[in-house]
Length: 106
Image (cartoon, rainbow, N blue to C red; front, side, top):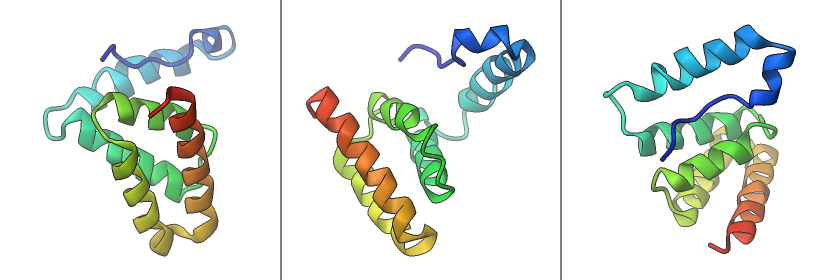
């Protein structure tokens, strides 16, 4: 999988944020050996869903699929977190997952 990076068009308004995102978050944190990219994706998707970060969630659901998680595994994780993070958060996340799965034909 290609290395993740912040959207290039954001450099115009927030060059430092893009730099830190690329170098620290995606260049250091995501590359640490303690967790596999697959596990990092599962954690990231779960936290974004739990915190109702629906703007960032589609991107990271896509990364999770590319990192080896299946739609079924993501669905199960979202179902599980519904009881801890709230039903509306889970329903939003599962709707975003369905849309992405439909778009990708998976």
